[in-house]
Length: 207
Image 1 (cartoon, one colour):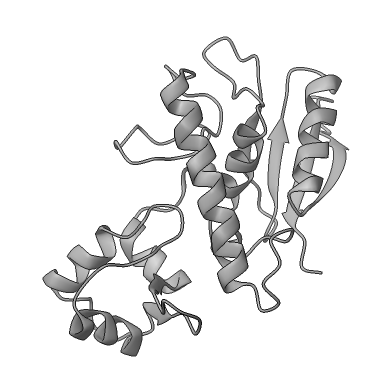
Image 2: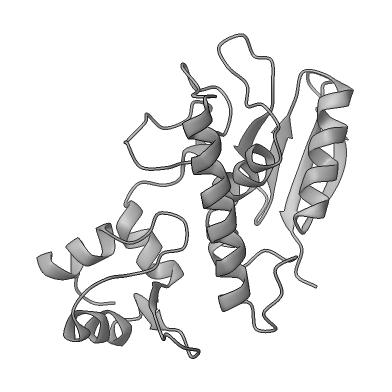
């Protein structure tokens, strides 16, 4: 892409569904985004338009929070809890939001994986590793770490397509590993050579 999107196109991008990347706009706006490689038209009815990985990068502007030790501040848009939030919401409304987001992600897998399977991560998850792993954990009922540090924390790693999952004990790590494997991730347990703490290294499964 040689030039940034127009203001109208940016508004369409910014209004995309935060999980699936589904777009709403005029036919001309959507066609222009497709032409610039920022969106694609799904081949199956109802032929909705979705952000491509490049479109997601344009919308987010800031790298995902995993590169830093602290998570992003709450922006008012749904985001999976990566662990370490100051005031994590654990009420019924949060549970409904998480369930809806997970179902949306499964639908995105169905629509964008070449074979339509839902047991393997899709392209969106590979470009949003930390949030994708955190959503799988939160949707399965795992508790993200709060100020007391008790719970899971998902963080980025220098390795491509891999995140680290930290927990307060072996039981938490084993539970998180089982959940991620069921959600289509490859998981291994490792030891930090400096602290000797155990952690998980997880990456989206391709086959």
